[in-house]
View 1 (cartoon, rainbow, N blue to C red):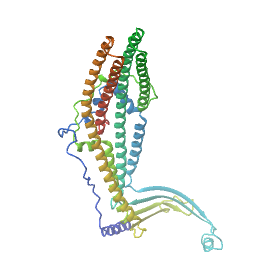
View 2 (view 1 turned 90 degrees about the vertical axis):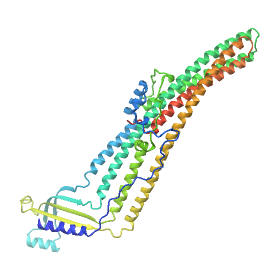
View 3 (view 1 turned 30 degrees about the horizontal axis):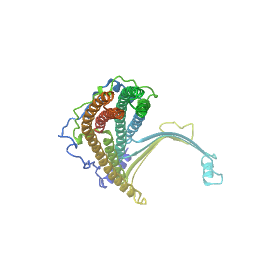
View 4 (view 1 turned 180 degrees about the horizontal axis):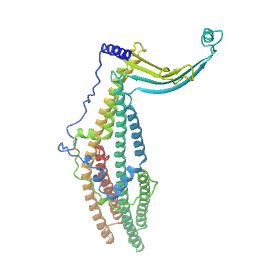
Length: 470
């Protein structure tokens, strides 16, 4: 025991003579953040991203699809498995500060040459030509965390775990947004199909009237051909829309982790609603809330810890090894206590001197990697602010476009009625009727598209602000 105390005292004196290195502190880099988002009147702390997705999306059908997606989507399940894997590594990292302990049992028989010194000595002193050795011992190895290397290694494991956790949240926001976008696109296609079928009825009536007028000699066969061509174009559009609806249903089914199938829906696009009071909140809050930006910051924190590890590798390392157990050169008295007991303790300080500049290179590369991750973090923040700004300006402009498209649709619908009355009275020709119907069809299809784009812009804003993972 006294010898062990002397060894520990020797190491303490040696360590005291070495200057300490302070732990690397993390300083958050300056970020390119405005005081408020562009296209917002005031800087308000409230944000739609604080809403849970069940509060943001109030359509029961859509809620059901999102629930299935969160539960069954394979990309999200893979991300969650990665979280579980990183969690196990984090648990293991917590034990890095403890010594390694092992137990081994060994038996050895050696028979040296009779003409060797060992052989002759064995025969002279033991009266035998071989030697036996039986050993059972515990082995211990421990490195003191003088410079914080082990602590930084634990920090790396923690940052890697948090990265996978934030990554899973980022994937969930993407899955939620993708399901909502697909659902609204499906409702738009339903609306466009209804419009096309209604227009087909108008085209059929126009063709029937034109045929009767041709039979009575009030118009030419060209009028019949044009009216028939318009009806055929509408039938083609209906077929294309039905195809797109089936493809969109298949895409939604895959998103929610199911085989391609029909998607039941009871609402029309005109009955859907999202929060109309769009509150973006503060850019600084978005940075801390958005999972992919937070993930990039964790990468930076990991690289900061890696710099600490590379720096610690350049300084002396204190390692202590010990073993103890029972040892005997005869099997019969192997476990005779205390005669067979043995033990040893070895400690040493190792200072790297010449490693072909490897340690210096590792340190400099780690610092450069940290600088790269600072730039990547700033870029991720800049991209996030840009996505929010794009969604805000899209929503504002699509409001105006929806209003104008609604007015245009109303005007063109009235124009169809006027054209049909004039055509029947002989004051308008068939081209005016066909043109009026074609313009009205395109206006209604465009209005449905603009409504879907506006819904999509609100969903984009919700995702860009970091909503969807709660």
